[in-house]
Length: 562
Image 1 (spheres, rainbow, N blue to C red):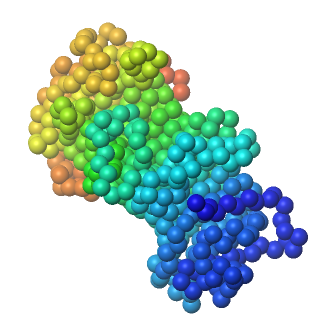
Image 2: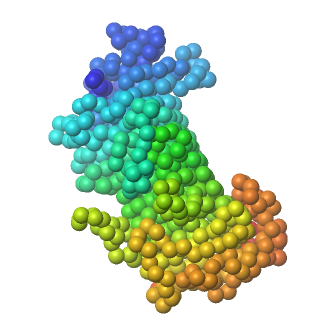
Image 3: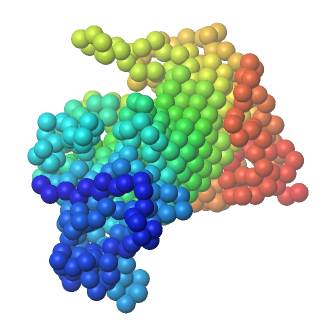
């Protein structure tokens, strides 16, 4: 199979000038020079003729479909002269559709390997089926002394070498219909309930580093991923992945999680909409996944996003914090109709927070053999830290944590068609739960954590440094008395939301001002916590941007009449 391989030297060409290369599937010819719209090449294969230099641009004609893929290997561009992959419009008509890279049967529509300062914009990428390339079925693709694990990905960014890679900017790119398997393939339920899936899948965007490799400064903005069989945007740092921005994107109907970060340090995830993660709409999908989740990551701010309609037999929360994380800030988000739940914090996690979020009807899943192996939960503190797989049968490791978890000023609405389910592990140490509104119209019940061997109920003696007070409950039984921790000074009453059951944040503005205004407490440090939150405990504005004047109000929305 032919492939495009850019082997780029660090030094500039002798002329010192950057070049533009044009490709037009209908009107071009691979016998042309490729350096003007009139001399455009026809196919992506023609790009093998050039060695790209810093400042070079590869421009695909709008309204055209290109079969094949683009691979950039060892590209060493610069901050002031990046290598650009983008589009051009005949007659400067920017209303024409984006050019489509059709990468069926390829590893990736665009592969970026051990490269720096690359910008990709104004493209659409598809890769619907075709299986993995024949040469990859031995599990590895050889690139000199490097090996690249085969995947089906829209955009695949990989750091394998010892030199720093990164400074990758992706803007206004649409990735859609990415599957490893051809239509007609049916995913097994056994694979869906495995930890991350073991069969062949398609991913929207995948950013990876191997041990010893560094991938820094990744930006994805104003882009979309839709209809892929696994994760929409995945960051997988076995080496280092640092300084990530994911801004103003859409992930729709991903078969797995919408977004996922493992081994990431310092990231901002803002203004995104994730809708329908864990989608079962295509039988090739994994059909399970949270809107977003983190594992083994630190210093992540997740704010002003919408996480909607997550599906699956397990996980599938709006946003959940998997184990081995610290300093994860989840604030100012809308979480709605997610099967797995709203608040989910696993073990060995430190100084994470959910604050000033609105949750609507999260946690509606009911555990049932062959259908769902976990209960959906409105609130879950879990000590799960993974399994020991060294023996014949995996066994849960000794649970511990989470530690110093801050949960305050959230508005949680659960309608009467859902039983709100609560689970709190006995090994949690340090938690602050205050100023939240738990507006649970129907029933509530305690459930045992079920990502490990269920623990027996017990007393609170093992729960250390818990500050649980000053939360507003619609009814006195909203928080079951069997839960290991209890509010020491609860408020009972109706906040009287402006439009309960709606899907706008403003629908949960309280109209009963006497019940919520200035009724919150100033958030203290958890006893024994020397760190607090990386962004501070005090919040200046609410989820709608209203200033917080005087004492905080209850819930995520200020109703101050000062």
